[in-house]
Image 1 (spheres, rainbow, N blue to C red):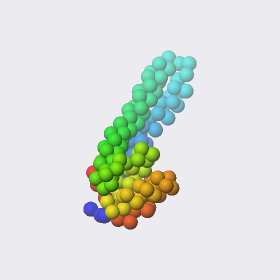
Image 2: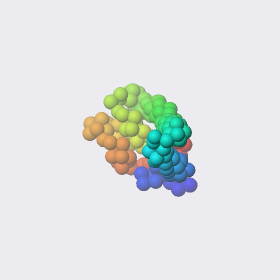
Image 3: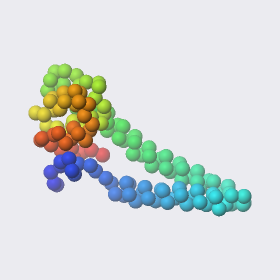
Image 4: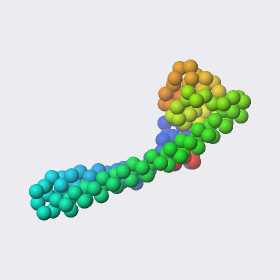
Length: 143
C-alpha cells in the first residue's frame, strides 16, 4: 500500500461513483423521454410508473451514500475531539465545521494543536488544512 498524502487520499468506488451513476442517469433520462413519447397514449401510465421507479432509485442512490457519511462524520468528530482533549485537556472548539475536523484528522499529534489554532484564526478551508500538514497521518479505514 502506498503512503497516503494530500494528492492520493481521496477514495472513489468506481462501481458506485461511475458505473451506477451513469446507469441511473441513463435510466432517468430514458424514462423522461419515454413519458414524453407516450404522452396522450394508452402507455402513459406504464411510462409514469417507470419514471417513478427511477426517481425512487435515484433517492435511494443518494441516501445510500449520505447516511453512512453522516455516521462517519459523527465518528470522526468524536475521535478528533477526544484526541484534541488528550493533547490539550481542552474541548475542541464548536466553531470548527465537520469538514475542517475531518481535514485535521490527517495531521500528526505534533501539528494538530497549532493547526486547530490556525484554522480558528484564519478560518481555513479543509483543503487548505490538508495542504498545511507537514506530517501526514494516514486514514485507510474510511468508507
